[in-house]
Length: 222
Image (spheres, rainbow, N blue to C red):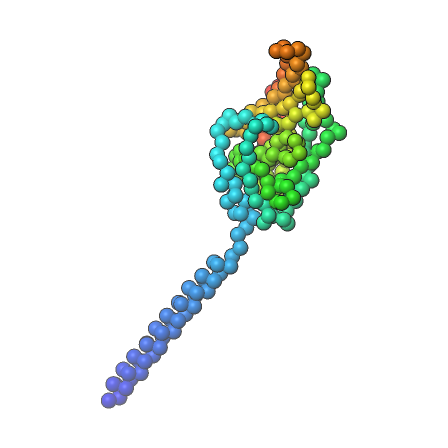
């Protein structure tokens, strides 16, 4: 009889322990689920998700200022970042009687407009930075911009733009060829329409590249 009582007591203890373990397991699972549900997305994840929706490009890629469509990127979740009045690295160029990136032009740009929508084109994603084209409003051309994955601008240049003072019969503009290795050929063209069906053209080129830190550098091989 005494042994039977001990057996019953042990059975009750084992059953109680198993129930406690099940309850603890459920609590851990529930708590784990709650933690996963409340972990906020980082700025870098949000940015990459937006960039991954943009169309892919093919290299070599030609960047021009006109007759092009850019996808819209919503940056409203990044209002804590610097999105406006960001400096551009000017590359002053004189060709014919025209000039590109004169020092009297506005040397800043915006990642987005006032509605926090940006006109972007993804060029390349590297481990430490991202390269995008950004179309500026008000005929201010196309910028090539390098960004960190936290949406901080590293560097920016005018890659496709026209001389704002240009008018018939002369025009000066810049466009570019971008290669997979992030070397860039800036091409400048000046056109003077003299008479109907007759025009005079002048061209020039500059070699640039993006270094490992995401900065634009002029090639020594010119």
